[in-house]
Length: 365
Ligand code: PLP
Image 1 (cartoon, rainbow, N blue to C red):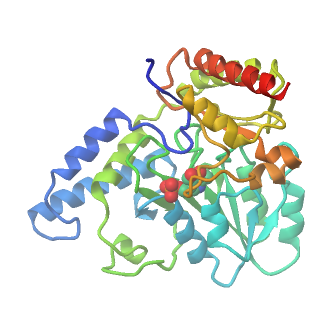
Image 2: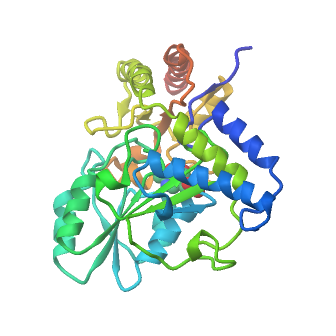
């Protein structure tokens, strides 16, 4: 039997060889990075090298990189830390990691293509006290890219701070905190092809923030707790190994998948918007996403229904609902190609998808 075809990179990317090697090397280091003796200093050197690598990859100074245990924590740290004395505005299609950290946020609408409505942001910024705006660079379900640099300019004009969730964009499209002109940027190791349980929050120069978890003063007092050196070293190696040149190869596979499915009655959510090269959200009207995911799983093809949900349950996507898909918001699967997608990925996906579609049509007829 053929090996499973893994097309769920937005849930987690396969581990990159460089990341595995860096994580294993870090596991063999004895010291705590905060210890002053030789073993501690060796661990500290490795930690600082990882920090410097992340800073260089994503447009920050090493001293402005706070290492965390994942993207969820990096987002929560930014939102709790930077929202003091500010109201929070968040895109309606943000990840639950952001929405849960800002339960009182006023939600900013998107258009039918899933892209943030900049006029709505402008209006929201014009009235009211200083704000913290939260906007993801790329949506995890549709791959839609938001106009982050434009939003950053608007925020500056109105004295607002902009926090960017860069978890899905990192490693897939060029992403730089400095180039965007944003105030903070959240990253996750396992979406880059690193180990799970590592993340980082990059801050604009001079921007301080209170910790979510205080402790032994690690991360310059911005995040207490001994750093997870193996996961973080692996994350930094993954970031350095990520090749934006892969984009064209993945986009060609993604386009072939879309063309095949469109020809057989599917729709693509966010088709008109700029998107990540590896992601498509395929809507098959009338067929619950869960039915599609299970049928494809049985055929050896791994995809997900919108966002991966910790309960394993499939619900109606808040992202697609916000884009006005109505009842079809429960009928979309997310296909997200990993960095190492095989050359025949589109062909194999379309075989499985076509067989599923034919079976469903027979069942309905
Ligand atoms: N933000 C986005 C856009 C995501 O897609 C995810 C994970 O799916 C997260 C944040 C959370 O990252 P982590 O799994 O590292 O906590």
